[in-house]
Length: 458
Image (cartoon, rainbow, N blue to C red; front, side):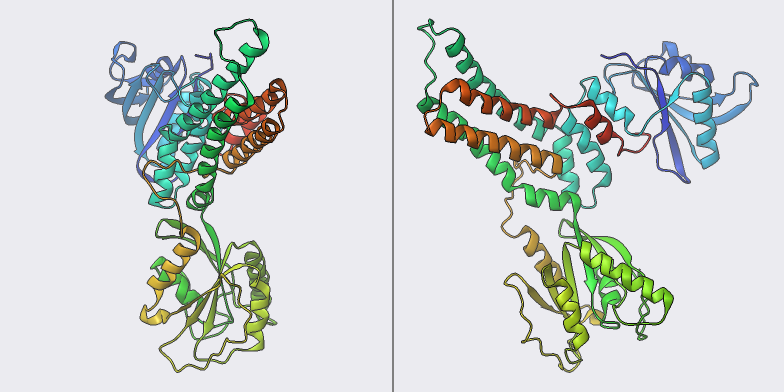
């Protein structure tokens, strides 16, 4: 285990709550806590025990807080260091007073993600598991949570280790043939023997990549812009999808003046819904700003819900909006179907993957059909299974693609009867790319960048 100083941070969310936790980790965690804790002598307690007492300023003997304090001794902790967690009342003032006293008596304020970083550096978890921690925190759906938990438990790590071991055994065999050709009892590694070994790893990488699109959607969600002319029911659709009156709905065009964002769970897919201001010419300065933001949201969107009024004729403004998004993934929502049909969209040049869904949002009709259409668009044909290792992290996907590319180059070289010592270069490169996923070979700057995305107490 590496030697570090003792760090501390508030591990609970900022603001008022029932409790707040100040966490310490390091060789002096227990000693520092014992200096300010009035209760049992923490130097004599068993590991993984909880103790009632008070946090007291040693200089003034003033009681600052009533607490429950947990002592966890190395190596059976998250960081593999001594860890102390001080559970105090969840007020902003109370938790900050405890943290300030901890820092005054020898701890250092933790950097973002430093607790998890220490867990990685001390060998408690590998890099892919460390990245799963932040995925758990950010998970918006049960599926996203399950994928992150599987990664934290080592499902991806075990798969990567297994593939690297297969490559390593092959590389070792090649190395023996090159360095010790006189060993008659070692089978000669020929291209005909090498090809199926490389192909086996390639096939497993391909299966992992097949799950990558769906895994990435589950992890990151789909940025979804709701667009349409003013007063076609965009805000009503947003409210129906999130099942909450988030957006103000009136019969007055231009009610929505800014972009409204909200996450919603659509059958395990997190949608980042963006209700845009109706795009139209206006002299209102505030509404103009909203229209510009709407255009930016449309440009950044992965999916567009294009809302049309079934009770009105298709207009030049509708066509102008459609031309803005025709190259996007699109679902056309024909709203207000409870009213007489006046809409004709047969002239629209729809792409083959465009979907049309009929709704009456005010009557709660068609919402389930819309959710099913979105799910099928992104998860239709998804490989399902409890034993499936979903790849959802962009960094992991990129490294697996690079590893696959190196192995494909090795296959081409094998089929061209290239000398085995040259093929070995491609195999080593593939092995190293996979190692970067779990942190076996990774630059320190990348580690710092990854952990900087975490909150202070994690």
